[in-house]
Length: 443
Length: 97
Image (cartoon, rainbow over all chains, first blue to last red):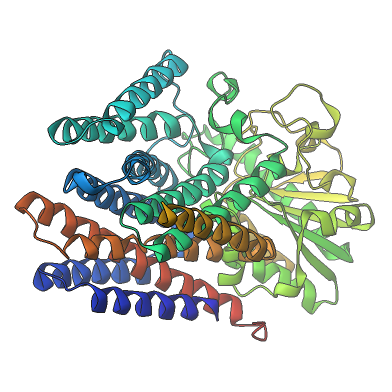
């Protein structure tokens, strides 16, 4: 598989480099290698599939920091023999590397739930961004045209400003825009490696960096296209939309409802029971089912229940397919990884384009933790943040079963008319629990 | 300057080849793809090692060691996570490549 080829190639490259250049401090190098490697391995083995996006973002950051440190050290010593281009690529390596580092740390904190996932908009956000960029350009020119101590200090200033840039840049992006950010950081990490390669005149580094940059760019493009928004809008001028809406469903991870008076509780239970009965009826009578997973499935760790129910349907001879929207989840391909973890049959997973025409002929759509990707408002209503976004036409199915945490709008802040549709059965609450109940009743 | 042209063409060629190859990766493999390219981008580890090919000051040693350690974290972590993911994808399907 490609993975091993890549590992092997990298090991060979390392061997070649070690043969060509003698290392003066083998002990330091060896210790650093082992320390970093062991920690990386331990974490990689323990992390579960839900945490993958945060982990990948964190690794982008580690790559960024390595790139900018290397560029910095290389740039600020023996500058005398640098040509113009090398000096500038060193500077770019520092800026891109440092910004990738801090941006990834913010992204990782958001994805791991250590920071609010909603966009944080500072007062005068664009002004701060502009001042920061002007400062970067100014110090960049200074660093590009100086040698010796001024170069050292302007490089330090560049590092500071770039780190700030990464933070300012990524705090404003959140929620469903995360896949774009994480792909973009993938591309910049590659770019930083490439510039780092130019300054140390290592072609392998340039080549690898460029390949990674290309890959990141493709993913970024795919994600943007899936949202029908351009990169600039997502990254630099996001709508101020989410600041005014009610708390988003993705923010409060499950549970913790305030205690209800007993009567309310009783009514709620009756309603819930009715809904569950209707859900079981719908599930029993349906002959064809499409399952639409979303980020809520990841939050509720419900992928195993989802696959169990899919297998139950299959066992009863029903036609079952998964419809996966490209931006479902928090990184490209997120849903596929989770479903693969739960051992879903890959042959029944379909992309938006492949399955969208099939909803009309489908008896039941089971939505698990997805909102915006099935929101018909994207087609019917003009002027919302999701207008024009390609969606899965779940509303065309004969029955719709929604297993979401609540009926609040999704990340986009747009009310979902699907919840009010008479064809819809709502099973609100923790998707894992609800699905387990459904499975028990269904059995 | 010949060197510069060479480096620029290496960059351009790799970008194009990467673009062509990676456009073909199906969406379901996008997460492992990103995780693997992420690990590849940590070839900066070579840069870190090369820092030590000449005499270094204490500050440079510290920064260099930090760069190597983090890049190693990235390489090892990235590849092992990709491996774990790909194994999951392979459980039920015949190996495709």
